[in-house]
Image (cartoon, rainbow, N blue to C red; front, side):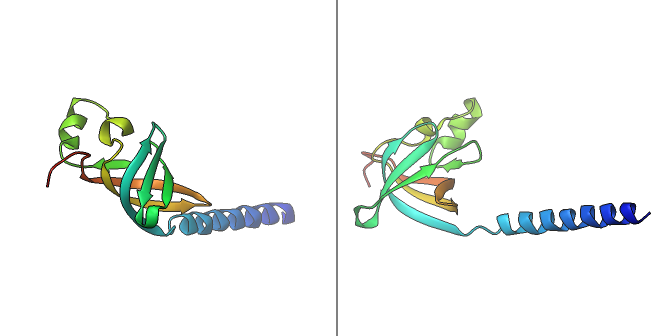
Length: 117
């Protein structure tokens, strides 16, 4: 009976620990950066931000791309990061610092390269 009580308390403690850990993960600080796209691949985006500082962001299937015409492209099928942005585009990136890795949550294209204002 004592063993059962100890095991039950240990399981309960682990469950509470998991819940606290998940809550802490959900509260990662969100930051933004704006600049010009220097390079883009299927899993990363490099942006030259203010002051000439290059920032490289990790891109995955949870990253959202927003910009003129991207909704129409998405209706035709999934779009890749290289379909959404190109070198020279002006972007605003909302990202999370995931232990030293910058994960892009949202990439908004504010001006396409070569677009006239």
